[in-house]
Amino acid sequence: MANASASSSSSGPVLRRNNFIASSHQRRNNNGSVLRIFFLTLIALVVALSALAVHLSLRVTARQSSSTLSSSSSSSSSLLHPPPAADGMHENTRIDTGSSSITQDRVYCMIPFIWNPEIYNAIMETWGKRCDTINFLADSIVGGQLEGDKILDDPTNGYKPYYDYPEGTFPSNVVFINMTRSWFDCENDSDDEGGKSGEVKKVCRHIWEKMWRSWVYVEEHHLDQAEWFCKVDYDTYFFPDNLKYFVRHKNWNPYTEYHYFGHLIQHRTRKDAPMIVGAAVCWSRKTLDDIADVYRTMPKGSKRGERGRCEDRAHATEEVTTSQCLREHLNVTAYAARDEELREYITIDDYARVLTWNRTEQGEWWFWRGKPQGAGDMENAIAIRPIGLHKYKKPDQIRELEETFFGPADSKVISRLKPVAKTYVKKVRKAMGVDEL
Ligand SMILES: *[C@@H]1O[C@H](CO)[C@@H](O)[C@H](O)[C@H]1NC(C)=O
Ligand SMILES: *[C@@H]1O[C@H](CO)[C@@H](O)[C@H](O)[C@H]1NC(C)=O
Ligand SMILES: *[C@@H]1O[C@H](CO)[C@@H](O)[C@H](O)[C@H]1NC(C)=O
Ligand SMILES: *[C@@H]1O[C@H](CO)[C@@H](O)[C@H](O)[C@H]1NC(C)=O
Image (cartoon, rainbow, N blue to C red; front, side, top):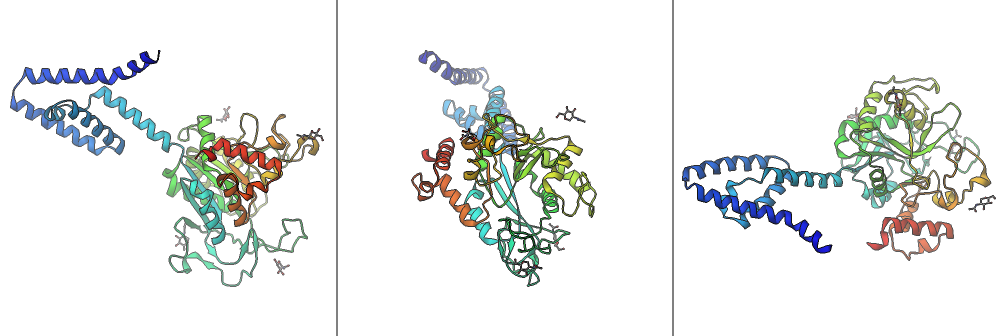
């Protein structure tokens, strides 16, 4: 059995080589005309030169087959004989498929940003390095002391546009987006911890304008850099390789199919369509390509409140409007990224906390509303190949997650975890093969 398969797999190339040697012998015997050889050589040269003009993989193939040829026959006949057509096709197809399976699912990470070097560095030193492309789309007005969403200093104090800063101030993957609305002139808000309204100054959430302008920019400048484009909030710890795993598993085609996916919530209010929550949301290249046209041409500058339209508007909720635009113009609906066991690939809150949410006990609050019965809860709430874990606003937290999921298996960070979180982390590391590397 083993013998049979071994010989059948090797018989192909052997046969081909014998055939070739036989035919080249015949040719040499059948005609001695120097002129004819010269002529054929010229033709072969032209063929070889045009082969050089096509892309790299083809060139590699040509070189491979010509070296095979010259090792199995005289040098003149290797020149005479361009790679056999059928064979060449076969090899090219194989190599193309090979390289496309490497490049087909490149991940573009787009991070809406307000310039903040501490967070920038934390992301770039951790999960950001696993994106095929990563760009921070920052508001063009720069300044201030931020802690998460909180503004610590007085915004009238020297905030200025990025181009007034000396050259070299910002890394090259920070792209500045001119906004019509400012991020620092909102009324004071309440604290995240639920303090009194008006106590803290926070960054304004003109996230919808930021988002659509950013996607238009990415589509105009970077469309060819990836197949999958994800908006990743700066406070989401992202796993680009698990995203690739997910789309390959689905066998999705980014060039011909619309996809828009993430953590789906069904009903925030009754009139909202199902939508993907902010933390991380991805779409295929085709979706980006077409939605950018919609964004460029939709009505701008509305001062009206929410009215269920795809338009530029102050105080719009980004998630709601994005799904509105997709549905209205492209007939695309949001897809829930869950694994076979209905575990979520993207969390909306700290993973250790999500792993304690018991649906039976909690009842159907908005998080559970509309989720299928049997959707995982408690320790089965999150996929073991997570794509995004949300709510880590501090650089230290981002680095701690890096150590948890990619650092040594016996780190203090892991040993400090509660049992449920620890079990989960071990499953994730195992699924990703971290400890085998
Ligand atoms: C933003 O505005 C500045 C100044 O007008 C301009 O130089 C720059 O090109 C604009 N950026 C974009 C991305 O349009
Ligand atoms: C807004 O909050 C900041 C602290 O973050 C405080 O210093 C300031 O006085 C507040 N402004 C108003 C108008 O309440
Ligand atoms: C929209 O998509 C659904 C499937 O998702 C399809 O059944 C329907 O015919 C589409 N509508 C239009 C107008 O293309
Ligand atoms: C969830 O809560 C219910 C009701 O309190 C309980 O019976 C069940 O055991 C809990 N599930 C887990 C996995 O702890």
